[in-house]
Image (cartoon, rainbow, N blue to C red; front, side, top):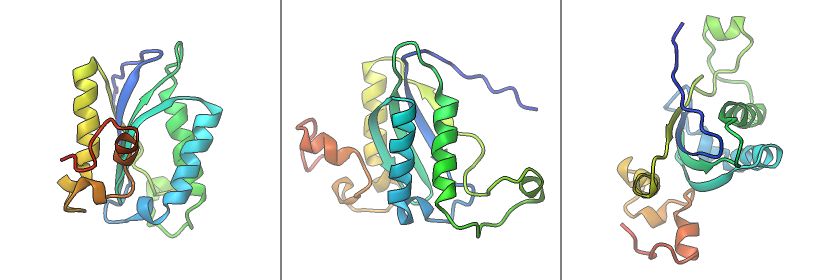
Length: 164
């Protein structure tokens, strides 16, 4: 069994990448309302600040800041994944292992996280998030991708509308 090393810092700021199991599916944008509901419910139950986020068809990236004294990332992601999965009809292919464990085959089991070290690291990851739709060839201009916190940054005056 793998021994995953995770840095748990109460009140820390983290960058995440979370993937669908079947990367060819477009569930995250096809069911964006259900995904948003799952995030809002998790945040209501276990608060965190969403610093930046982008949702692509088969994966998402986001940055959260946790409350002081709180390092419970795993349960937040578990709740988001469960809530979203409950909104999706059970039509995905299941491996024998997932069938034996009565698991859905929507999400990859794990997620990738990175503890943000300083302001420069934070700004680099925010830029990475906002550039991601362009990187994947989904749009010609980052402002054309609707599922990005870039629009909040522009609205709040933190980035120009023609950024990148």
